[in-house]
Image (cartoon, rainbow, N blue to C red; front, side, top):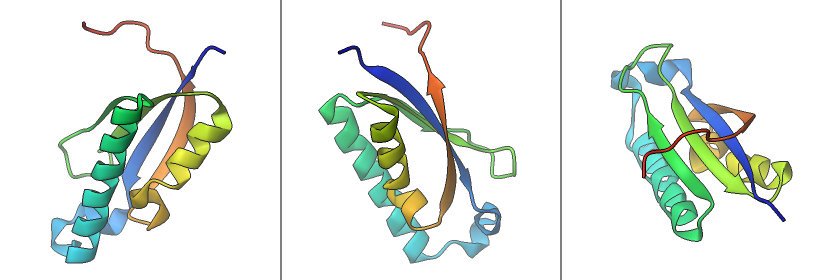
Length: 102
């Protein structure tokens, strides 16, 4: 069965756009989020993850997955620690990588 690709966009909750509002709790959650993404990379389910460097409402992160189904992509997104713990909000999109550097 051919794998499907999905992108989920992450946005910090508005309160966290001000770095003064970050606590050890948020730092810990975001570290766990990064570790989970590293695991997905090792499993072959993650194509790419990254974020913009601006801390304003236009800032975002993206995670591009290659998985068996939309349900799997949605579960991975919902169980992302940053989403599950309410640090970030996420939106899932069907996606296809058209060009990628080797």
